[in-house]
Length: 429
Ligand code: SDX
Image (cartoon, rainbow, N blue to C red):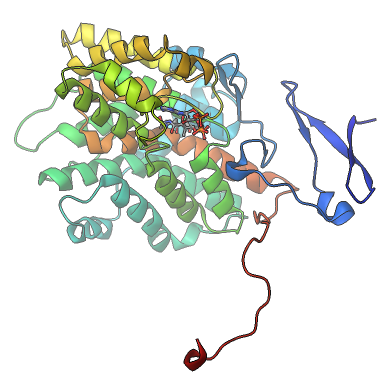
């Protein structure tokens, strides 16, 4: 017999609310019958206490700082996998065998090119267009080029859409960068790995040979893996919500890209480096900015700090910070903002304001340091986050459509506007 929680309502009704328990012993009240049996709904701004679904993709334990994709600890995946392996794991549920990995990689390599007419989009954007705006627009437009694969209920159409998105997003992103610097587009080279191909499309020029730095390839591979999924974050919930109306996968992913852009979410990596640069220009006066972040009359926040779920160290921040040390040491580069970040972390984590609120560095705090070491320009940081998060978005969209209990997402509300009142013609107002 499932456990229940008892609810007694002011008008004397007594309800049994079933308890749902997951494989990691997380528990939830099932309130699906609440409105029909007690004429009540729940209210939870920002869904802080509300689960939208059950999922078998990613597990987070915010208190213990645990992150696992399909049961595998992020630390092991980050150190031992190709990003393509993690894409396969998240979307299809298991780590690929060697044969599955080769087939998956070979299929993707055949779809890295964009339709030549898609290049015309880039001519229409202003040169200083933010690449996240370009990414969302071009991904949304994929539904006009691939009208043969828009049906969410046709497995073959979904499969080819997954391949096209994973294969083409790095090309779409690199073309956005080339547009911004006025350089010729560099077409994908299918003899390179996913990360090496992206770096070459970003930084090669037709007038000279380009050697991909293996350190940069492994640093990018690690960054994409640690960004690949994070259960029901804002952009993934957006992808699920848009997909729940039976909108096609391209439209759903385009919506996720827009949600990720916000500085409270994926845009924080760009905002964090801007903040670290500002602190450095201000004499690296870290304490001044920590005090500003604590001041309620000031809407300044430490970007890259805090998290809705992690009330302990974000395990991804630890992995990325260690990779920073490695990349900077190998490149014999001293990035002054890394020193500012380390000092900012030290001062903040010894301050009662941050300790009481359990605010720790999150995934966005150190990632910008590595992106800079690789040569990724600031406005492309969130684009890299999107490339990493794409397999997670896809996995959740597929899982949602595979669930027999899925229905269109349509939350309720509590109305607090004017009650009924008579209409007044304009000459009487
Ligand atoms: C990502 O959800 C995910 O999983 C997201 C993500 C993923 O992989 O998908 O992990 C990626 O988006 C990471 C977060 C990136 N955003 C930032 O770094 C922006 C800065 N951080 C914050 O704005 C904030 O911490 C959030 C948005 C991340 C979380 O916000 P919450 O959970 O709504 O928490 P809150 O705003 O209610 O803050 C609780 C308290 C408040 O103080 P009090 O009102 O209790 O006095 O903590 C304070 C906040 O003022 N606070 C901060 C702070 N973050 C929270 N104070 C200073 N600096 C900060 N960064």
